[in-house]
Amino acid sequence: MAYGLLAGKTGILTGALDEHSIAWKVAERCHAEGARFILTNAPVALRMGGIQQLAERTGAQLIPADATNLDDLGKLYDAAKEQFGQIDFILHSIGMSPNVRKGRAYTDLSYEFLQKTYDISAISFHKMMQLAYQRDLIKEWGSVVALSYIAAQRVFAKYSDMTEAKALLESFARTFGYHYGKAKHVRVNTISQSPTKTTAGSGVAGFDTMYDFAEKMSPLGNATAEDCANLVVFLFSDLSRRLTMQNFYSDGGFSSMGISEEVLEAIAPKA
Ligand SMILES: NC(=O)c1ccc[n+]([C@@H]2O[C@H](COP(=O)([O-])OP(=O)(O)OC[C@H]3O[C@@H](n4cnc5c(N)ncnc54)[C@H](O)[C@@H]3O)[C@@H](O)[C@H]2O)c1
Image 1 (cartoon, rainbow, N blue to C red):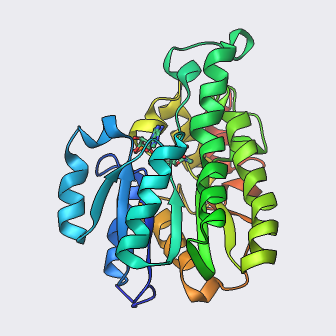
Image 2: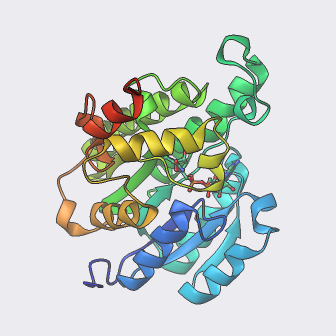
């Protein structure tokens, strides 16, 4: 069902890699709601090809940009300005930890990798906002959204240094949200999403067990990528006009739970 919530709105969506990506679902929903947008991803991700089809289907321009690289972001914003003038929304849907990829234990992190984790997964968010702010790229009442995970608030044993990256990401949303809101009435929020079967998600050790645990714990079950996309559409729309500097849980109730009957039963000693 489409409601025309984003009719006439324009923006930039990062992070669509394949049809499982949360950003892929966001692009489909934004397109259905009447938005026009640029799709962007790291140059290496564009070479994998799947995103080309998404661009064709949604009428989007595809621009490569490493989100840690200010020159790349500058060229991306030049293209957006040329196509749309000012824009209404930006989605940050980017995460990667070399420590996680290489299976480094949290008590044996490589600090070189840790810097990369922060740069790719969190500081890129500040860079995207700072450059947009300095160039006055986003319209008044525009909306910026980044995707987070509840490990920013609580310990999830295998989430490694992505834990601190998400805490930093959410902090950037609050602090930049203050400055952007005050100066230009631009809104900044994060969505804390349930475990979702994507390339980035499945890269975390023990992901399937975390997924099943969250499913058993959440009264509504895990939020899907489509559920997350619906919330992004709402946050990009005028319906959420005075929501800013918040972290919204898209998690089927998980964040309010202590223990559910299903988890009690699963760990009860067998008679
Ligand atoms: N999947 C989950 O369980 C889950 C849960 C909560 C939050 N999230 C967050 O959602 C976001 C999207 O992840 P996803 O699950 O859709 O996985 P995904 O692997 O489909 O998306 C991650 C994206 O980040 C991109 N990326 C990596 N390095 C980049 C760089 N230097 N410049 C530009 N782009 C770069 C990748 O190419 C990829 O498209 C991430 O921030 C992730 O942490 C995921």
